[in-house]
Image 1 (cartoon, one colour):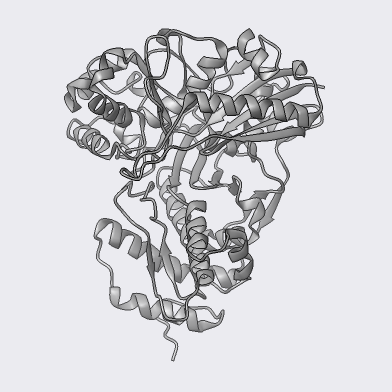
Image 2: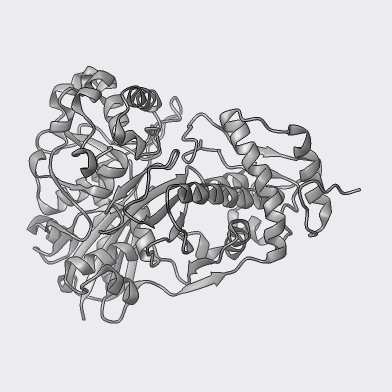
Amino acid sequence: MTLVAGADFGTLSVRVTIMDCDAGSVLGSATADYPLKRSDSDPHLAQQSHDDHMTGFVSAMRSAIDAAGIDGQRIAAFAADTTGSSVVVVDEALRPLDDYYLWCDHRAAKEAAEITARGHEEEIEALDWCGGVYSHEWGYAKLLHFLRHNPDKRDRVATALEHCDMLVATLTGVTSPADLPRSICAMGHKWMWGERWGGFPPQDFLSRVDPLLDGINEKLRGRFGNSTEVAGFLTEDWAERLGLRPGIPIPFGAFDSHWDAVSVGCRMGDVVNVVGTSTCIIAEGPTDMRPVAGICGAVPASLVPGAMGVEAGQSATGDIFAAIAARAGTDVASLMADIGDPAPGASGLLRIPWDNGDRTVLVRSDLGGVTLGWDLGHTAVDEMHAAIEGVAMHVRLIVERMGAGGLELTRVLNGGGIPPKNPLLNHIYANVIGRDVYVPETPSTGIGACIFAALAGDAFDSIEAAQERLCPSLNVFSPDPVRQECYETLFNLFRDLYFGFGEGSSVDLGRVLPTLRDFRLAGGKTVREGDRQQ
């Protein structure tokens, strides 16, 4: 029996999962929360403490070992994924100079805009491969924001790390910036690193963005690797704290959404919607894919070796559902149960899910959610139904944009915490996208980390073999032809409004509200472009 452990660090908690590689079963799991620091005076701030992360991790690991009923000394390998775009600035001894800028910390919008503008002016190729817009969530922008707003700490800045790299460095005893394990997944998607252009974007370009970035690329040095490579071995100190055996292998880390995609069996041509508080959309494409405007990252080997890892996403999904429920004084599960099985567009509402800005394909943090078609009879149930349809239509728009870059879509999979508990969402996705949607029978969070731990521990000789044994079985949600046809009309309207509000494209606004009213009155009948109910 080969046992492995994997950790998944999310926005508010860490989950540790322990699996038996021979049986392909989960023996035990546990979670531990950690605080998210917000500010009433600055709603864009979102920070977390490295010490809080590690305290929660120790608690979750020991609880998972107890739940599995095993001796932690039997665990053969460990791996961990974390949220992406969670950046910590450290000194020469890798001690944090401040808390993490969490992924949802959006204070660096000005810095990101300056990087984007200068990148276009100088035609920096790296910018093309992150969709043409450098995000306010990403590394250089957050680091520059830190340097500008912490002048008293500038002389102590040795480097900056993504959470997944800081975690691996901590557990393996790395204390020097030159020896840091740098994840290709992290550096490629958030720091414009790529072998194609020799690593990081040119230093002189960054210095022209702001002289505070002088010499920054040298400070970002380290060992670069993908998740199939061992980054180091667990130290005696951390082994004792965690209840594990010292010296077990730990691979390079990666982002939670990427390993969540692996955990549901992602293969070439697949698109995985990792649906949680937000949605990360991960695709495994051919290495000859082209850069695509608005798609926030195409990086060779960021997901698995020999493929292009493609990332996109929605800045809020489950958060939108939770906000609707909170405003109604209820909970998401109750509202979802009250929806039933309505016809497409039956609410008469159309919702553009920009409640936390647009991550893909417009990459605009300054947008807000839009809901059209209200009348006096509408309820929170109607809004929730429209919200599910809105996020599904946004996903279809993103998937179609990926296709423009050369992705030949094979399957659509819904991973993350929400889909296994929400059949209605999966049915709507299938009807909107017009494809079968595959959903794990049981939650898959944490299994991706166990897969890469198993590879590090030599339990399998390939990712595919590990997926075959460890991934959960999939349920299939197939589109209904009649509902699919209805959603074609609604999607065309959504697309026009998405680019109308988001880019200023021309839209026939006179048809919008009458069309939505037609859907409300149609009672499940097919509504086509140009039809009018009398």
